[in-house]
Image 1 (cartoon, chains in turn blue, orange):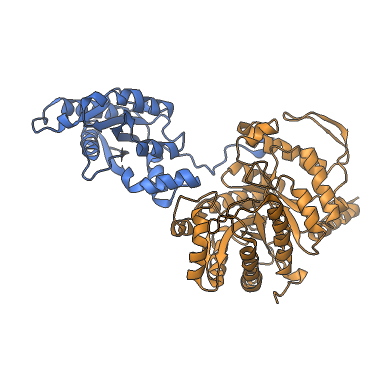
Image 2 (cartoon, one colour):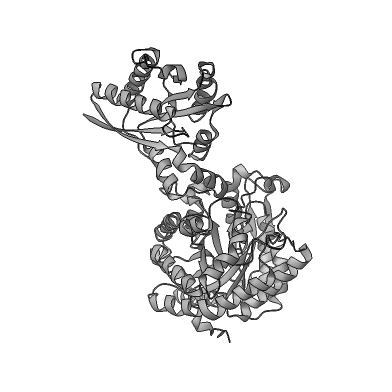
Length: 201
Length: 378
């Protein structure tokens, strides 16, 4: 089996949060879909709530505190990413956006990404297409066609075989396919110079 | 009372650097006038010499709330009132200044100060400043590379013909005055985060100064490692013979709790990191040390563990609205309790093949030795 790593970024604020619940269902579905394609995934979940102060400090000082640096490095080194935000005021949450603001602008280039969001009502669902997808398109990520939105309705008692489940399965298989078709990610060392100074002169 | 060192004891240089900010004292609400702050910086520089420090370095800024738009004017005035103090910059903007004017200004200062001059190149990171001087911040690195190449040439060749991308060509140009004794001022290249600048310093065999105070030690360590290995790559010596300087930031009182209590409001409202991380977080993440002189000694000696033996340590002391009286007291502590111990400890650890901090005298001696070798060969 090929070994790859999946990083999940969840921007939910309450505990427990439906954002994290969706993130966990998505990552379980991706692990299972990847296994069907002979890829074994290790999963790391990053809860942005735990990094909220560090993210604000990075915005102010220009460098990441140690715990945030570990999270940013993990995202950069991920073979695939699941990014889940609650929808606040018609868009991704400020915390979610701030995390991707402090991420190196090249860290997601060519990386398969599954985007997902939660909100109280289905009326927010297109925020995924109008807000999250352009954000990741700007970062040159490869966003899979199916994005997954879960409103309060979707968490109802009879939802186990409902629409949410089928969207999760479809999105997971799309991400797993992207994963299987790629070589493992290699992270460029910023201190490894690629040019001789004479060429810069 | 401070034990002013003999020349032979100045193996490693210790000093202060100022960014020249005019900041409201958050504990009193008082903002010094430009005039007051400018007089204060002269007092601070003179006191640095009185307490036995080696170096005073001044920043260059072209925007409020900073006053230091013309460092050579200030440094010349200080030079006239000091005897041993090495005058430097932190930094000189190699991007927006005309390299011809840098060559002229600092050669002039070098003559007036009897050789007690070096300078640190920096790019400046304030976007709006570039267009005020007809430049573009997106070309920051190419400007730093081309402008310094010209400056380097102007100080070493009497008549220069030159053409580049960023300024009008030069034909048969001679920069005057020529450097004192035909020895150009020593140049440090300062950078917080750009590997290209470490590479530039290594290429020329110049010094590399890591700002150090705004970023974690692990980052500084990587930058210095890169500079040292490339210094060797370009044939200037072994990696541990490269010339390294570090920034540092301290606030001291005899009793460390007093230091924390007194400095906290200045930290919390400081222009760069204020209203962000806690004093405790920032102390852990960066070299900032707030405590007793002994804590400052221990922390500073620890820098050597991750950058190796180095030549220059500058401390930021006069920022964030700290009143003059406090700054002078800090210099007293630095000069009487901290630096004498650091001098002794660092000197005892340094192997003989690691060069001392460069001075005009050492560069002149090296030049004369080199000239006589060439004569023998001829």
